[in-house]
Structures are given as structure tokens and as C-alpha cells.
Length: 446
Ligand code: PLP
Image (cartoon, rainbow, N blue to C red):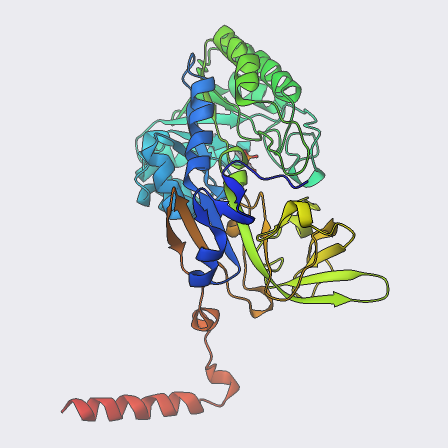
């Protein structure tokens, strides 16, 4: 009746991640808590790698999908590269031990400072999103007397048939460069002495369940590459971005092998090296958000399970109308009373703070635990302190072992960066008070 992703399974009527009972983690760490399976993470990376073993692509995990340092380190240890979109993600990538030659950098708004830092880290590719950005990278590279690898992010105008907020390669999208402009840049390549135009980059959207849009995009990129070659530009890399879909409910996404079998021959024919930037495919179903029921609230029209996680912890349902499977952590499938329907809602003061509608979850009571599946990608990374809420803890499970990989925030974290005393609001009184305390402490030193 419920969909259990990969290494989340019911054993003796209680949910386990690998071999660890979820309630055991909750007893020590509390809720809400993100729980990740090491096995799923690694399996998915290896599955993709092995599906493409004939053409050996560089697989760069998309840091934006999950930026936890323990997760980045374990994937880098497996041989993954990293796909980054900011100076902050560059900092994390370097700190996670990712060599520069495995880092690729997209983003429509790279600042001069971010470009300089990426040059210093000797990253593999700048995925360039506009002619203006190209000019800036060129001038910085010339100034630093280096030549950098650029993949123009080509907008192939392909409808990936996914949610409008995660569609990125149609004409009206802010991402990428249209075919005519790419052609003009290629024709003008000699005027960029700081740039080696060695790649075409694309990312056509996310949660794409069929191979057809990817095939169409590769065909269009192939034409672009051939045009480039005719103009004297030796493009030898094609970065296909991320976007592989996963099961949240009852989707039937292409298998990694099916995807590889469809794409590899096209890549071989083009004579380029492939780069992939998967995020969701690797980490999406490796993670669940565990939350506790605070109240069951019944009106004459509806039954709500009010839980202690909110849209600040997992934004996808509110932002994308995304479906997430919700499952009681302790239940007996045979004895489950399926006449009871619930909307699962958070405590945040927003009508959009709803994780699930009309779900059959049996007889719920306060303190019962629920698991929200498919929360590994675009989950914890989007968490915020909205409504004065603390960002949740994160836990990594491997076999029968588990460890906290991000501590739960504390109340102090809520005010850590705020300046509480504003001098022009209290006529400088607090400054006088500050000077007095400073004098006192100097005296006490003598
Ligand atoms: N690459 C780029 C440029 C992206 O914008 C994204 C997601 O937005 C990804 C890769 C990762 O996509 P996914 O998590 O769908 O694999």
C-alpha cells in the first residue's frame, strides 16, 4: 500500500533505515530529523557509473541537491566530481577534498570574486550562461595569464515535460544561451584569448522520467558542436546536466541502464567526453524526513495530523506541489484502518504548509512518528528559520551504525547573526554602557 524507497523497510512492524530502527534514532536525536541511507547513496552513484562504463563519463554530484559535508565527502571518496553554483558551494567542494579537475561551475550570476576563486581552485569547467559572463571570465583569465575551459550552457528549447518550476530549457527560461548567440560566440571565438571553448553544457530540467527529451537535447547539442567545429572550435566535452527522475509515488522513470543505452551511442558518434550532473537521482530516495504528530485535529469536514516538521524543513510540497509518500513509522499493514484519511500539515503560519492531503494513515495519535520519503534531495538544503524554527538534525546510517552529520540548531543559533543593540535607536545609551563595562574589565585585569 505504501511505497518504501530502497533501503527504508518495515521489519517487525517498525520502519528501518538499513538495519537501524528509526525510533531508535528519534529517541536520541528527537524530531524532525533527516535520515539518510549510505547504501542507497553509494548504490545509486555506482549504478550510474556502471551503466555508462563503456564511455566513462565524469559524474559530478549536484551539490545544490544536498550539500551536507559528510555526504559530499563520501561521494567524492567514491570518485564523484561536484557540480557547484556559487562561491559557497566551491568552498564546500574544496573542503570536501574534491580535486579542481572534477569541479564544474554553473549559475547565471557568477560574481567577479566567485570567478577569481574558481580560477584559483583550478576548476575543470565554467558552465557559462551569457555573453556578458563570458566577457568577464575572459578578461579575468587574461589578467591572470591563464586560459580556462568553458562550456557554453546551450538552451536547446526542449520541453522536458516536468513541473513548470523545474523546467529550464525552453525559450522563456532564464537559463542558458540560445542557439543563435552560441553560433555568434563560436564565430567570434578568436577574440577570447582567455577562453578554451571545449564544451557544451545543458540542463533541461529536473525529475525527467523519459529518455526522449534528453535524446532530443543531445541531437540539438550535436548540431551545435558540428557548427562549432566548422568554425574552428574544438568542442570535445558535452555536459548533459542532471534531471534524471525518481519514484516519489508511482512514476516509472527510465532505468540508469536504459538512459545510458539511449545516450552513449550518440555521445560516441559525436566524439566527445560526457559529463553528468545528477542530484536527485543519487540522493532523493536516500533520505527521509522523520516527524512526530503533535495533535490530531478533527473538524466536521476534515481530519488533520499536525506534525512537528514544517515547510521550513521541507519546502518541496509548498514550492512545487510535490508529492511525498508519508508512512507511519510503526504500523501493522494488515491491521491498518484505512477508513481514516488525514491531511498532514506543519505548524508554520502559511496555508501552503501541507505535506500531504487525504492520506490513509491508520489510527494516528499524538507522539506517533511519520516518515516523509523522497526527502534527500532539495530537502535539508532549502531549510530555513522561518517562524523562528530551528533547522533539523541530519543522520547518516550505514548497516547497523548511525551518526549525526548535522546537529540540530539551538535557540542561540536563531539570534547568532543579529545585531541587537542599534546605537541610533537608543541615543547611544548602549555605547555608554558598553564603554563602562569595557573600563570595568580593564580594571579587573590590573
Ligand atoms: N545541473 C544543473 C545546472 C542544475 O540546475 C541542476 C538542478 O537544478 C542539476 C544539475 C541537478 O538536477 P537533478 O537534481 O534533477 O539531477
